[in-house]
Amino acid sequence: MENHIMMEYIREEAVILRRLVKDRKELTAAFVKHLTTHTVKKIYFSGHGSPYHVGIIVKPMLEKLLSIEVSAEISTLFNNHSGFNVNGVYKGGEQLLICPAQSGRTTGPYYAAVKARELGIPVLCLTLRPEGKLAKESDIVIVKDSGEEESFPETKGHLTSVALLMLCVLEAAYAMGKLSQEAYGEYMEAFERLPGACSRAMEATLVWYEKQKSVLMEESCASIIGYGENYGTALEGAMKVQESTLKAWSGYECEEYMHGKNQAVLQNSVLFFLYAKVGGPETERMQQLVQWCRERSRHCFVVGKKGNPLEDETSICWEAVDHPYLSAIEYHIPFQVLSYKLATDMGLSTIVANHDFAGAQLKTRIEE
Image (cartoon, rainbow, N blue to C red; front, top):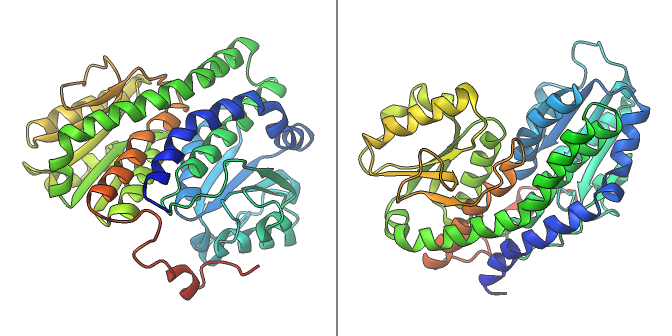
């Protein structure tokens, strides 16, 4: 299988998004039924890597629209050093464990699900394999129809998890009367525009890459900086590039980056800024950070909606939807594209990893 299959998956994401929006009632029905028949007060996300980032991205939306306390947990830290209901205030049915997954074979989320079931805590998983080990430990199984991926930096699977869970939140909030018909309609209208925006983000990044390729090829490090739901986007984007290129990219929250990391801003530092126009102090702080960094580095790249006040000739900008929460879907596309393009130009495979059998040797997956 040649490298180009990864780019084909990225192009396919617009088609997947349209299908998810069209079929949302059926896909989210089990989640909506659970939320409308149970008093859920605490939700835990459990995962490693991309599934963990899914929790970080969806958490703000879930808390805001459903008024449920949410935590996003790295599975092994949660399993070994924390746990469910540590303060003893919740009944079993008042909690819900969500495991966003691909195959459902990763050990950490699987053992979290086993423990949850022992405690009478319902488990929801998203998976490609409804017959898999994680699905068998789950009360609610949402099947992702995005398909298996031959490339190891997963792209369409991550986007599907984020979009599906956001649709679950919107449908539940609307069914429970927490979201007005007008507000629900605005979210759906934005969701319907996302596929086109994701395609435009992809094309804009391909053009931008050809202009900035030498910078990215030369520098071994880069930082991606976001805020709100796009903190998770920054983490996921950095991980994707690092997986595919072995370059040391890192993701940061905007204010976190301001507190100490600025000492690492040099003339050749490569910095990406996810500028979501949500207004308020976070947007203003990002503006301050970009202006400060531009005085010290030649490679400050703003990622965002075309016409934003920080856009310059080096920005990756397109006609974005840039809707609160939903921006995390389209803003991740540029880093999927960069992962593919950089790996390809470096002569690296996105099909066979540098240590392709490490997972089996280190026993990170449950054998089926």
